Image (cartoon, rainbow, N blue to C red):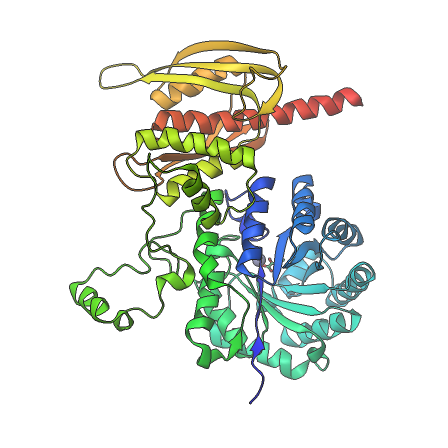
Length: 531
Ligand code: KIV
Ligand code: ZN
């Protein structure tokens, strides 16, 4: 019997996924995701686009240093400087990869790049050769391959393999192709490119017509052996192919596909929750595999069938993707040990002891307010902690009044520290000079009033560009989570806050954005001072 071959999973949650509007993550958050992807067993983690910003460079470098299982890739354009910067970030990885992309469709070549096909072919070859002089593992992506001329695409693929590319990626960049059509393109490349056996064919499908997963699966049927995808399908515009859907299709239909993979499916649910919580992008309830209703049976006939034999209406077991059987476990009587174990079970394996203790204190306070603590509540506590950074302004208290016929008013008291301190750590024990300032303001509602009072104290007026409030778990006493974005001096800052009190959650989120904006202005002033 023919040896079963394997599909490699290339996860781009931290690069293409992070390009989703509003999905940006800080360094700590990216490292949490990267570690979970490693545990999940993805073959390659694309950690970012190093030349795009100093933050991205640092994130790729840190992921490269920490991850020991998966290969770590960085994205770059086909230009020497991009490639060198990418290498400087990924070179720390046990298994580094440079991912070079260049458009091959006439539309992109003529309108975007303003070049000829011959020039682009030459650039592609030169870029791969240069990349190869730095790193043995080179992937080349023919951007907009889905709309590229097939003769030209085959020529480019052949040339980059000759130049040293080990993986050739065929992206459907704008999600334009149909599954049968895309599969035929992969089959044609396999048939027509003479040196194709020297490289792995990869695909990278976008979901503009809702076909990213179908196109990726069709490509696998036709010989692709790497799929690029993201957790929960997040990504540019309508997103990328969702990792969990491709993995489960291969797992549920092994005889149809006859290809293996190295994904630990029991880690899927944790990865989905983690990414959703960190990015603030909520998973739709009817989303395949990880949506809240994916295993919920409403119709009486279905419930009856499932009780008699799960297989009547279920093609997979929720436990196969790691959905906990019972998540209603913790309350005010739960101890440290149970709490720490739950945190580990939820996928947060690398939290420092001091942070764990602080989280336990917050958990106890929350457990006094709420009857039961759900997994989502614990995740919200962890994420609030990991998204907070250094604070110049620390919230002491907020009190707000509102109601029919009254003018919404808020009083806020804030400690202003002379230099930034770690969020959540009291300044009293440290030698940091601070002053406590109180202000009151009126507004259109209690949140607006509180924000105005904060602005009076900080002397900074942030403009809210995005605000969302959601209940983290179920029940009347559910934690509220606020995610917001605010602009200041032409930069956008994000903030996240949780509390059983929505005004307090809103203020915590705003304070995070204020502190980020303040830190950035201080850094900028510092730089100017040194010049
Ligand atoms: O969609 C796309 O074409 C990409 C490439 C950079 C691989 O994201
Ligand atoms: Zn893409």
